[in-house]
Image: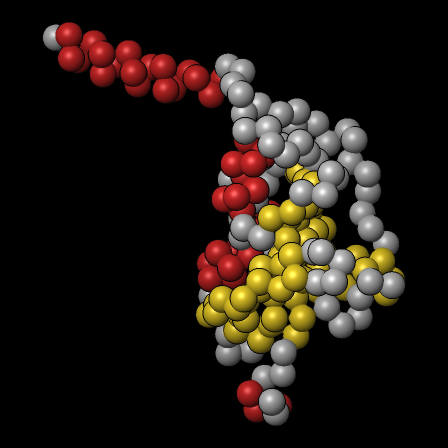
Length: 176
């Protein structure tokens, strides 16, 4: 009987704990959302509607999401004021959307920006995908897990921006 009571007590605690404050709680208000960028690397951006493919990136996401183009690349930007597992890595979202994904080495730019990189393709599209998460204090991450735990334990204070850049690659029938 004691084991059964302990089990139910543990289940009850686990069920109600998320409704109380925890060391992981951060303001979820997007009242301080600064707005979207208007250019990328000197090129003006044009906002695009979110389509079916972006649904994997936006599902239950606790922040703002928008997609843009600079005329050549597609740029998906996600903004959040709190750590959340629903900020999903691009490689996971692309696999869920039916793409094959190949990991590439991270890129480090002269500016110090580090990017996770993948090739993603299906029978109709081929992309070079680069992604990074950053905060306003210079923190940067190339994977969601590292970012999440840094944010959840307070080593990084939000808000955070996740940028995912999709650069088209030639289809095999179009040349190299």
